[in-house]
Amino acid sequence: MSNFEQIGLIPRSIVRTFQRFLKQIGGETDLFAIYEFRVSRYIAIASLQCFFLLIVCPWLFQIFLRFFIINFLIDSPLFPTSSSSQQDIFLNFHQQEHAFSQIQTFSQQVYFETLLDSFHHTPTAKPLSRIYQTYFFQCAQFYHQQSLSIITNWILDLLTLVFFVFLLISATPQILIFKTFCIESLLSLSETTKCFFLIFFLDLLVGFHSSKSWEIFLQFFIEHFGFQLDHNQNFIAFFISTFPVLLDTIFKYWIFRYLNKISPSTVATYQAMIE
Image 1 (cartoon, rainbow, N blue to C red):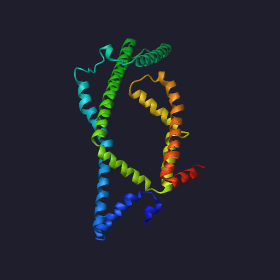
Image 2: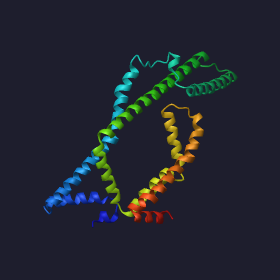
Image 3: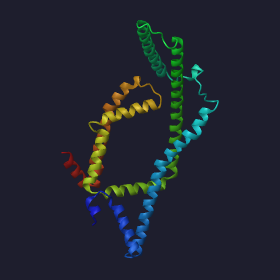
Image 4: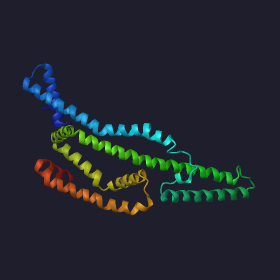
């Protein structure tokens, strides 16, 4: 057994494939070993192709849509970028409330600066009407672009989801090979390495500090699709207090029901590490 296999950092399936390749180069192998190596090489190449197909291709597809299709539609007359039409500025009521709050804050700031200028007998550099007009135009342009960004996100994510489902349907054999390769690689790891990844992912998803990560994820999701964040605080609090508990229950059931049958030594090592 090599040092890599003893350490357990590299899956033994990958190490065995590399060893077979070295034996084939040195001429120390027979026809069956050559056939076995070719099968292992085919599984590894097919798994990498499947990984690229399912992970990289949807990401490249979305980039292509964003820069070559959606931007073309936004620049077209169907999606005017000018904020002259008031109906094209706001997409929902939350944007209107936020814009009104910003305008109120700006008005109070301008009123305070005007009082200071009058106290120091310093005339303002610009008329108040010009200042308000410039600020209103900037706000209108900002929320107009935000509305277009939200619409773009909906279109991109929907088309990317359809494209991803199409890849799943069309690449079913490759997915099965990739699944087999991942299971074999995981099972070939040492017991301590398995427990390390198990504890890491469990603490990442349902650990003590995972609630902040879930909160950040939900806030990004809500803002990404243009929902009203202020009205979803109760939903975020309810989700954080229930969903990690549900995941923790599912993981414990999976460990007790399935992992205990597949690898009892891993379960024993896991229990020893968490105690």
